[in-house]
Image (tube, rainbow, N blue to C red; front, side, top):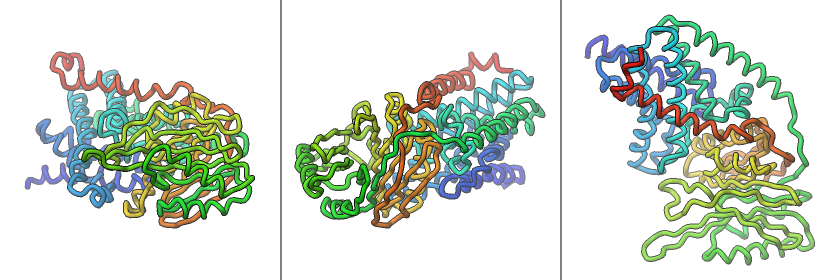
Length: 470
C-alpha cells in the first residue's frame, strides 16, 4: 500500500473513532464539533468519486459497527446490512461535499456550500430516521448532545434535526478554514455556539411550572399481569400508576375491559388513574397479527381511554400496523399524551400532542435485558430530546430499564437502573400549555431541511446544475 493511500485511510478513520466516543453511552459531547473533519479531508483528496465514497462509507460503517454492536445479537446477519444502510447516508453527504469543495473558491460560494451541505446532512438524517420504510432514529447526531445540557436547550427552538444541522455547520465552517482559508463561516458558527451556550445556561435556571402529579412507575420484565398488579400495591398517594409497554398479553382486544376491571377491583374505593399497556400476538392463516396499545383507566368510575402505538419497530414487531394520529387523553379535565416506546424516538407524535396542548407525556417502553444495557442507555438518552423540544415532563417506565422521570429541560430527575424489578415514586407536573417555539412551529423544520437537501443533491450530482457552482 502506498504511503499516500495509507495516510488517507488512517486519517478517515479518526472520524469513526471520534463518533464512537461521542455517541451514547460514552457521551463525550465535545467531540461532535470536529468529528467529521478527518474523513472530509480524505474525501477531497481521493483520486475519484468512487474512492471518496468508499473511504467515507468504510469510516461510517466502522462507527455504527462498534456503536450498535448490540444489533448483531438482536438481528444476526441482518445487522451487517443495517450498518451499511446507516453508513450510506453520511457517505452520500461526503461525496456531495467533494463535489462542492472541488469547485467552490470564493467566499460567497463557500458560504452556500456550508449552509447547503449542513441542510443536506440534517435532511438525510431526517429521511433515514423518520420518513422511509426502514425508519430508525438511532444515533442521530443531535441526540448525543443530551450530555451537554446548555446546548441541548436549543432543541426547544429547532428540535433535534436543527441541532444536527448546526453541528454539521460548525464542522463545515472549521473545515472551510483548514481547506480553503476562509474564516467567516467559522467565526459566525463560533459566535452562535457561544450565544447558545450562554442562553442555554440561563434557560437551565428557569422553571417551567405546571400542576403537580405524583406517579408510580413500574419496571418489570415478567410480562405477568398478576406480578405487576402486586407491585402496584406499593401505591401510597400517587395520582397515577404507569406500567411498561406490553406488560401482559391478551387474546382479543375486548379483553382489556375485563383486565381493567380486575385491576380496579384490587383497589376498592380508591380514586386514581392507571396506564395499562398490553399486547396481542397471534397467528392467523400463517401470518402474525399484533396489536399494541395502552388503556388509561380511571379507577373511580371505570372509564377507559385507549392509545394505539404509532410506530412499529421494523423487523421486530412484524404484523403490527401503524397506529392512528395521536390525540391527548383526558386526565382530571387536563390533557395528557401517550407515546409507546419506539413512538418517542420520533418527533412527530410528541410534537402533535404538544400542539394539542398535552401537558405531559407518558411513555411506557419495552427494552428487554437481552438487548443489552448499552441498547437501553442509547434508547433512554433519546427521550430527553422530546422533553426539551416540547417543554413537558416525560414519565418513562421500561420493562427492564432504564425507567426515567425527565423534566421539561431534559434533566433526568429519577431513574431505575437496568435489570432491576422495582417501582419508582416520583413527582412531576402537567404543563398547562406547552410553550416552546418548537412545539408551536418547529415541527415544520425537518420538512424544510428535507426540501433543501433535495435541492443540494440536485446541484451536487446533476450535470446541468453543477455549472453554476464555482
